[in-house]
Image 1 (cartoon, rainbow, N blue to C red):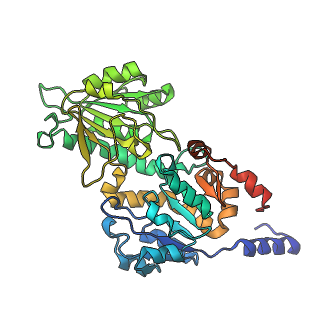
Image 2: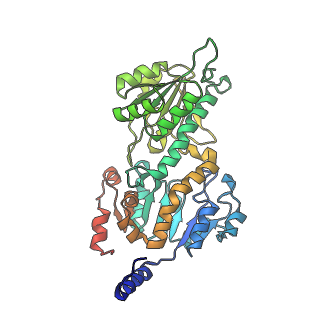
Image 3: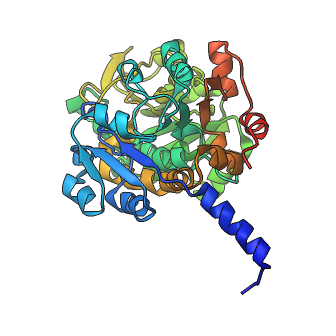
Length: 399
């Protein structure tokens, strides 16, 4: 064990005491008509409680994901009975769905808000409320790790990609107005053709499921390296192409299933599939637009809900539920917790300023801070001034 002079040991102790922070953390219950996940599992709550933080969870917040209030109480959480109480008690507020306008009035000055924000497609009133109240808002979809990956979003993207093929298989059935075919075909009958637009995490998971079901798979992306990686991973059992208008139009004429898996970090997804292309698709084919949470990559898409998940345009079924992982809420909650808990612990133990200063990836998930917009894409979208968080923190002498 390395020995330090007394003066140095005292300095380290003072530093530790100075930055030891005890936080009140709140977990909201979502509207189960649209969202069934909960932000943290009981095991994650236990980690926070063991570090002497207080956790307040709204009654039945975990019910749709099969986590009972008793499980949270056993690990030291305090059950509260209204969302107002969670908002009022919390320094760190955890939720899943993007902030609704009615919830903005419940926010308290200077709170830390963790959520899927998707501000690029929200109303300007949401951003205005976050700025006016000095909310430190962090979008799950924007947090990065040391390699530049999106660890929280990737957990959900993997689920969404896998589910997109299950969903497509169901809606290809005749009872759902589909083409009346199975993905893998049968002896003497060719398999369905699945076109995946985007070779990221969603696309890769969709390809894995589609190949496993026996479908013919075509993957289109603008990044040759991503396509090369997928070809190697799946032993050249897929057809790949560059995602330009000509190739997209040609591939979709043969498609039975289209998975829209386009992502531009923090920005609205581009409409790579035009209405003209949709018109030329097979009757009864299906588009699963996983990009809909960022505006959608299909011109004919618009958000739907689990209650009414599909609509038909030009005889093509569109499935456009923004939060597909919520359909497997328990798996999704575990996945979300695995990725999210380290960041919550870091903020709870260090305080928000120091955590943002020391964790570059976390700071890249930051959208608003002390009445300032700290995300360049969002600032550009709403025509407000952008401020660099690290310049701000350096001026405040965080260390």
